[in-house]
Image (cartoon, rainbow, N blue to C red; front, side):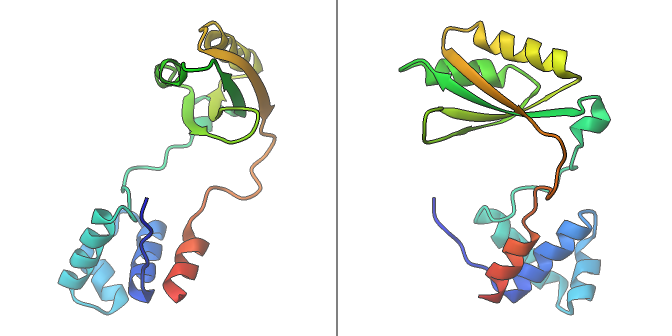
Length: 158
């Protein structure tokens, strides 16, 4: 994975689009004090380098009826990671799965309608022999939401 630096204009453009994802190129150019072509070219380069990954809607699972958020560590049977990933990928409530170091193999972000639903999801995952053990932590409240703005500002200032 290569790293990619950004400059102050890139950082300002990303911050602007983070605040207002539906903002058009002309308006972004006006607010940044640069030509529309500059904004378009910068944005294309940021996307091409993988710095900017998308412009889709930011969906709140709780508002969709899944207010319970849990972080579930999974231990995978030796040599069966691909099978476990297939099972996780087929489970809509599994929002994310990340390989980890330490005693567990994967950390999953899972949402559920209630704690009973969470238990049913975990039981379903454990019914597959590729997944050997789970440890669940239910999130009580979000103190700092997922964010990249401070990181972008720091990278743009470097």
